[in-house]
View 1: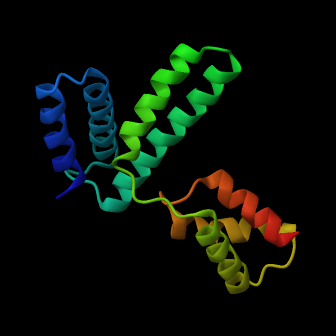
View 2: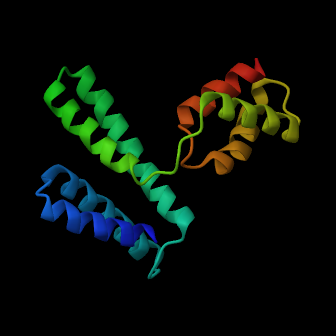
Length: 148
């Protein structure tokens, strides 16, 4: 079942169950996917493109969450946390820190990196491998740790 089919089914279910927050998030995700398809001039997105859109949605919400926390707006932070739980349903299973660390070490060996000067080369090689499955900040931290 494609992501769009899952979203449509979940949207119908959310309407029946009168889950306004979930319905709102599903509609936002669908709109983002459709906008991306229009931008790329396609009828349907590939799985990779869908993952890119979902990752962008998660990142936007995490950034908003941090800003609301910093501003002391717990009411808005709670709303964003709820939205994040709904978006996470459609994301692939996230890799553990140990799994990401193993991928980092393997990639460092592949590209022959030896110092922090090679950071960009390593990050460029790693990110396609962990796309949507690991947070970029975690990957960055682990790469820095392993290169120092």
